Amino acid sequence: MIIAISIFLICLLLFAGVAVPLAFGGVLIFLAYTGGHNVSGFLPTGHWKMNTVVILVIPLFILAGDIMKNGKIASPIVEIAEMLLGRIRGGLSAAGVVASAMFGAISGSGAATLTCIGSVMMPHLKKANYPRGYSAALLVSASPLGLLIPPSSAQLIYAWITQQSVLKCFLATVIPGLMIATFLVIQNLIYMRNREDIKMPEKSENFAVEFGQKSFRALPALFMPFIILGGIYGGIMTPTEAAGVAVMYAIPVGFFIYKGLTWPIFLQTLKESGVTIGVVMVMIFMVLIVSRFLIFEDIPGMAEDLIYSISENPVVILLMINLVMILIGMIMDDFSGLILSATLLMPIAQGAGMDPIHFAAVLGVNLGMGNITPPTAPLLFLGARVTDVPVKEMLKPTVMMIVFAWLPTLALTTFVPQIALFLPELFFG
View 1 (cartoon, rainbow, N blue to C red):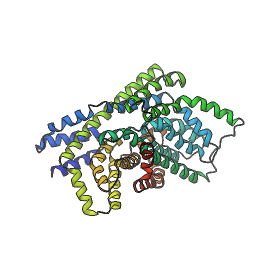
View 2 (view 1 turned 30 degrees about the vertical axis):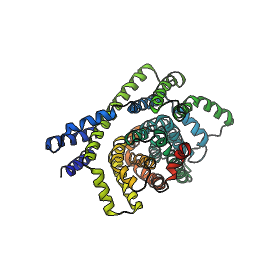
View 3 (view 1 turned 120 degrees about the vertical axis):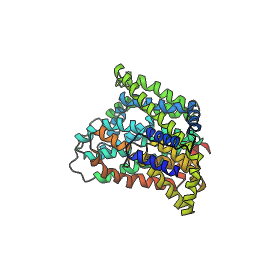
View 4 (view 1 turned 90 degrees about the vertical axis):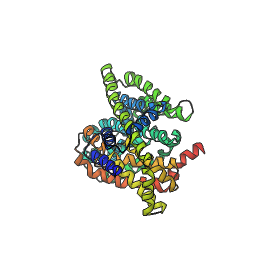
């Protein structure tokens, strides 16, 4: 009975708009006052699980993403994408998707990708007379690529929680991320093909020269993922060391090459990052404690029994697992949803024959989609602030992109395991 009340209380607090750490903290207080559980026995769990150098990768990538955002490192990437696609009808908005995928390979964060690419692309799209609600929705729908294209903070946490290879988890989400980007670009070009009111850019007389100049200017930004991923996959650096190198590399690039950073902006960036890091770490601490409570009460076993009582067909089981993850993603942020999903659902997925690395990709797509799916949809509401477009104008096109891009990718990733496992098996056997 207490367990059911606790789960109901978590859902109630989250739907009421209470912050995730406070919602889980409220449940722990409830458990303490009911006297049915010794909460103090669960508290050390959060401490010893977070007492590892691996967890440092999260604040370091958050800091790196904020430095890139404020250092204007996204601008040259957007310029290249515009040069390649901007002269096609609907190509400018497609360039936003490509730029999001490229920047996602640098930042590892959906929020940083949306903030950087959205703030740079949206003025260009408005100037070219693209429909603002649709354009903002497309940028929002592409921003979770930062959670799928490695390096991904979400996959780092998954690998840490489930004791899997970080490199394999990184590789598992590459093809699903590229699939989503492809679906979004195709859907966008089809949707925009008959829009005669769009202003097309003038043709450049020296395209090759201009493209070469912009590519040269973008080299420092494009070199960053090669440093991070090359160092990790080459065995030169651990993910934590790579995140530290990303910070140290982004600082001089932001100061001296793209000149987006000044000392006041840099200090403000450190302050903003500190606030974000504090919130994320407290949230992870609380979710880890609640996850330990769920394991202690054998909630994963109860959930498995419930699912198998409905059906023993692996296809039906995988569909139900996806449904649960979609619901979790709709009401929680990506980090909290990832920890709970990994704790509750990975044993069930393994029982249905799913490899843990395959599950990493399915979970990544689910949480990325959850970030843009109401009612919580954190990236959708962030996109409203970044693009200055009301959420109600973005809802219809966002749902359209979920149906025609995200859901097909989720279905294919779930039921065609090689989409997730091809690259890990290619590199690691």
